[in-house]
Image (tube, rainbow, N blue to C red):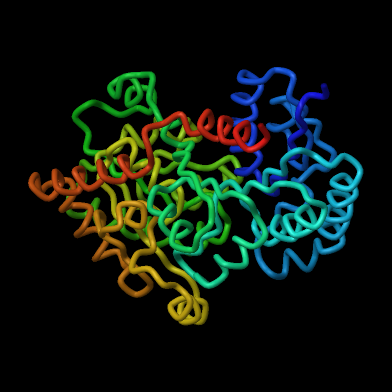
Length: 378
């Protein structure tokens, strides 16, 4: 009897990482399983026969998609051909919805079972597309507990497997040692400036955060500031920008979780990093700033009251969000001092962050996902 064959499609670096995590668990549970797919280095290292390198098509934005349309079409043709030739027992689609749902349609036409992992954000915008998604897949695996009810209400088979960050976000070294490594003492009050990992975020949010740091330093010259730099960014350029701002800021390429744990309060962009901060229990505020035109369009499309992922997961405003004109140095400075100095308020925010953790699941997300995969091919 042939071992089961699972094909996995991941189109971006984050999807490649999430897929690699559950692949490792799959191989522990069923060592002879055959795995092929579209992905990149992490999936390949985990033991997947990667037949198309997804880093070629990992682009964001309309202009970038149009520029790489030839590569995207080539990837679609290769995936379709592989589906037709190999007829896997299960096709697992990891995020990357615009591409992956097209592949889901082709797989269904071939009679191949389809599992989608990491739901498109139907809860945030275009909620009506959930029915189209349901018509193209056999099962949805969600990473946020609140997503489950959306699919259940639409009559679509769904499993909450838990968020993979729950197992990843942890600190192995004590806070005092981590601070010493960065030239900080245990008594320092440290404010984290987290402008994001994308160039567009840096251009919008870094100047605002530097102005905020300057204003806070005027009130309390003893404050220390810590700014992590993602591997996707130019460390030297950001260091020069901080130096030119006239504020003494520690610019770090250390592990992001180590940096978070050294902070007493953080001002952050709105993405996944807010979940990482919440999991480590550090009080924060969220900043969101885009062009006026983009924001006016977005306001008409978004169907939820929160922007930051931490608040979305908690289904409550557990941390303050500063949007567009509200995102100014005076407002951010006042909020950060409140988080640092108001004991009751700080405790209230930390309690809210515990709810974020609870809503992300109990852990073992990759193993839960692997078990779901096996249940669908048995």
